[in-house]
Amino acid sequence: MQNLAIVLLAVWLILAGLASLLNIRLPYLDLALPLLAVAAGVLLLVEGRRAKLGGRAAITLLAIYLVVSGALSLFAIHIPAEGLLTGALAIASGVLLLLKR
Image: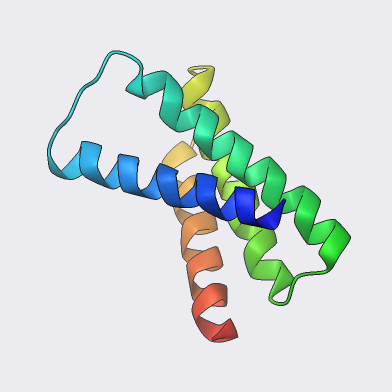
């Protein structure tokens, strides 16, 4: 299941990057990206608990970031300091992933 989580994460990263860089707007991209993010995040959380992955804090923060950012987009939820929350989660998980290496 970890491989599936990594594949979903990779697809999400590639699609999100291409959409942003090339300013691509496809009919279902606004639905597909949040769904991929939530699915990858949930699978990473489930696998992290079962396999006790190394760098567990980094993977957990990454998973939480994916679920939160995906759910906010998917359900059009707007909370105060949304950018601060997702930005802090992204930075923290990135730093911990780099320190793990």
